[in-house]
Length: 283
Image (spheres, rainbow, N blue to C red):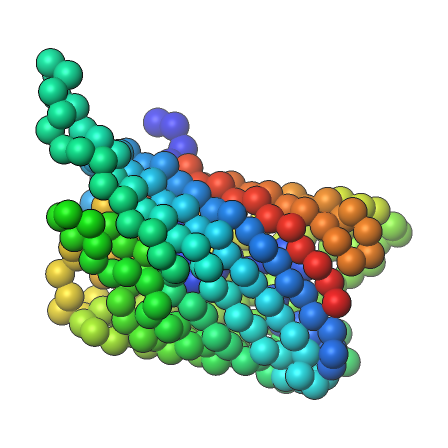
């Protein structure tokens, strides 16, 4: 069976290339990225991990991400989809009749605000702790049938611990970073355990990396999914995502990047390819 692809957009798991990880930004330095994410879906992982067909849908997020060093240990981070569009495409029957017209909503997505503290500045292994607040600015139930979403409608708090290490092998600059996190959710959503590892390699003007991130639900919430996983925001969604990314450095400050996500497995979440392209600036 061909590989199945799911989204890695869930806020935080899409750490932009060169930013994030166990390394806080030095005081007065920063990393900023504007990116476009999209998914076109016609199938989803159900509650037991089996793939089922669903109505054709599309999600599009234009996001701004920024890190800024408040000091050599404290870094402020913001991640916000400034423009979000969710579409349920027209459904037609076997005779060409329209069973359901196209429906769409536009707006903003949920915002993440966080502060990162470097625990081991100057050491060979960079360890940091982060507090992330998820602000529910997106639409949690929109459109004619209420199934269109640009956010989950809940205020969540995440405690995350990162550990990273960089190397130098000749002209190559590899690195590795791992994280674990606890996500406290509200409004009937189950709490989550998040984890991941990221490895990357820089050579001249090319930067490649691979992320493997996962989410496990504690199954302690009572919220019923609006559409049984045919979205990015269902309660008790779980997955293990694998995302390769390539970045090209245009100058010491500017660069572009692109990635595509793939999943080993998933539950209650879309099951199609996801794409993201972006441009970044280093202060």
